[in-house]
Image (tube, rainbow over all chains, first blue to last red; front, side):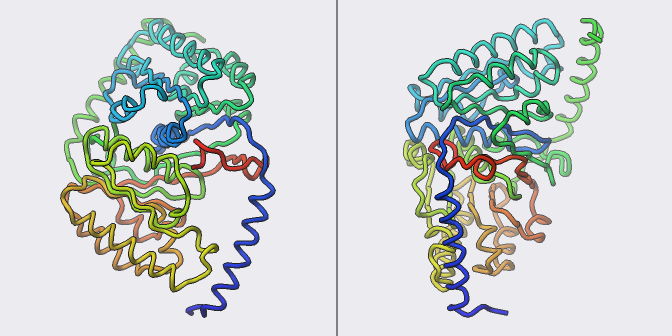
Length: 201
Length: 201
């Protein structure tokens, strides 16, 4: 049944008022700890979208990739257009099944984490992305307690985004915003489609 | 129990071989119909990240926003740096509870959809984002059958990304890749934190 114009208007007016009350009640500003986890796609991509928003507002962002270091990425070309605003460091050496060297992976992870710590401590950065940090935590390449301590002690207005499947429960507990990406359908698995430029990298 | 270096190496070598077999079996290339749905955050943001990837590869992208037109967005400043590659059209007039005018919402939606159709038909665009299309479908501002027909008949290599909660089942059935964003924790609701530049807009 089609609603009349007047009914629609009254319903929407009510909803607008409710929305305005809710927005008015939200006054706090704080640096957020954001986690993107789950087995679905979009964890890194959504972080990348937040980086774009931040630099669009003139905020400086640091992006540290813990895993995908060797991959050539489309986003790099875009970040390069904003050299003062984005510091993008692909520090991982590829997937851990490619390096096959645990000691080297731990050293690589440590170097990447030191960069994240530096950016969190440096007031110049409004946002820090620790891409695929959950993966190296899962492999115990970095002590979880140390990571949690640094995140908990971050400056009040610093946004930190952590991505990767299998986020540790303690990290989820500490986070302000957690989104789980669930894969309902995937062309790789279902149709034998390969990774394509603009979509996967 | 810590694994020995040799055990780690053997395990990773096995995993690498499996990974290589999988990648080798995926040879198809096609334009993907991608849907980001669910109540969580990151649907638009992940689409935005894909736009960045695509333009980083020199692909032309069209972005039509069906709902958030009036909102000033950080991404616009970034897109403006790539005027030949991104055509960004915020065509919605705001949330439907703000306009309170169903006939106007339908006309606005129609104009936005015509733009999406034009971009899908035009070979110049490698990727088209129909942001929050699911929302206007939910309100019946556009006939679902017409939308499905256009998407089904799209050129073979055209990527189309549709975002918004409550994606219709028929759209999910047709899609190549569906990611559901689930909100596990949200600072707006839980802590009264307001929308902040670089995060929400």
